[in-house]
Amino acid sequence: LIRTLGRGSNVTGELRRSLRQVERSRMPDGVVRSSSEPREMRGLEQSDAISRMLPTEYMLLSERAPQPASKQRFHLRRLEHELSCYELSGWTNLPAATSEDKTEVRPTADGGPIIVCLDTSGSMSGAREAVAKCVVLQCIRTARANNRRCYLYAFSGPGQCEELELSSSAPVQVARRRRASRRGGSGGVPAMNREQLKSLLDFLSRGFNGGTDVDEPLRRSLQ
Image (cartoon, rainbow, N blue to C red; front, side):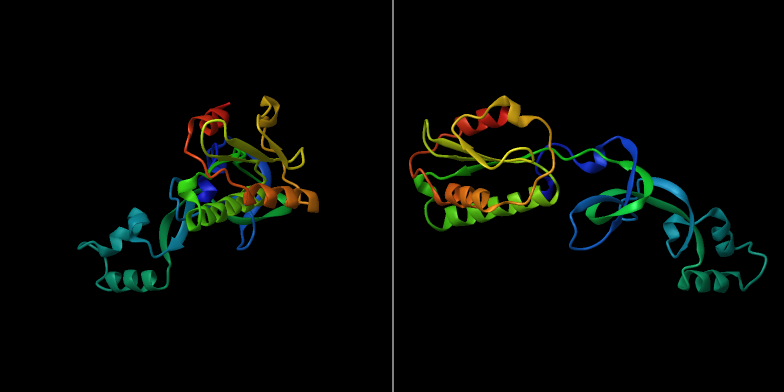
């Protein structure tokens, strides 16, 4: 769910020639071809998928098959995944490693920033606020792993709204009013230094414990 937050998805971008990405666990999300997304035909392959068989394979099951053993040959070929089938696949987001020399034509649009509004009102105090802040930490991890910006808003009653920005071009900043220039692009996210980590932990440790006014964080998110 968290990986889908933010503007756009890599698989929706326009096609460009880029370094090839190969599915690999425990890596940042990339764009790879997968048979689980059968959106286009790429060619032919050998498989056991009856729904994608070529018409010539259906002839072996016909009552007018030239030899009685044709059906047996069909089931044997299916058992050995040797039926001639159309190859269908599509682009999807999966953990992937990027090749250093091989290229391919694939969608390359970058995901937009992740924007999180954290309710720190009195009704959230205790376990609810702790769980919400755990979700915030996971949002930050996902943003950094996928080279995306992350904007956090801690809010409560009227006039109680604080912002924290995690971006590629600036250190972690806490501000009561965000400049419009901070929203330009979704550059790389560097590793946190000690000062940035301290600012993040300080931001998450605070809370207003007042009323609930969602207008201000939503207004800032839309700017």
